[in-house]
Amino acid sequence: MTEQPIQPPKKRTPDLAILGYNLLAFALYTIVLVASDKDNVFFAFILSIIHFVVCIIMAIAKSRWAWALAGLLVLIIGFGTCVNSFHMGPMH
Image (cartoon, rainbow, N blue to C red; front, side, top):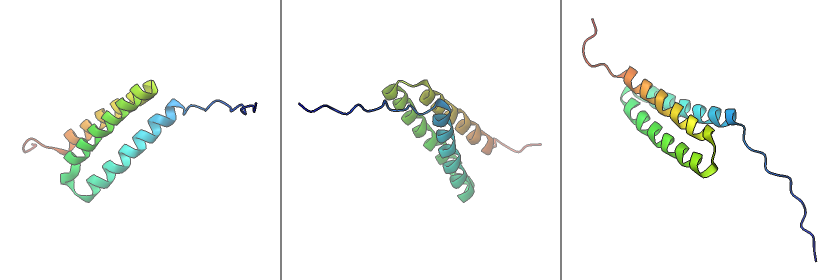
């Protein structure tokens, strides 16, 4: 009978790393889309909604609140970016 080698437990990704990587990805695709054309801000917001959904799915799959928090931050910042770029009328 052969013995199985004992493998060390997998290290968990720190919560701040999960937040940082998600915010970095969000910043990169938002900057690229907004810099290419001002009309792409709405598309960047739609992409942030997709990013949010993926983060929520990861939060459920991995049972980690950091993923849910990352998704929430991406959605809030994306909404703020979208609202900031639209003007409802002439500003006096």
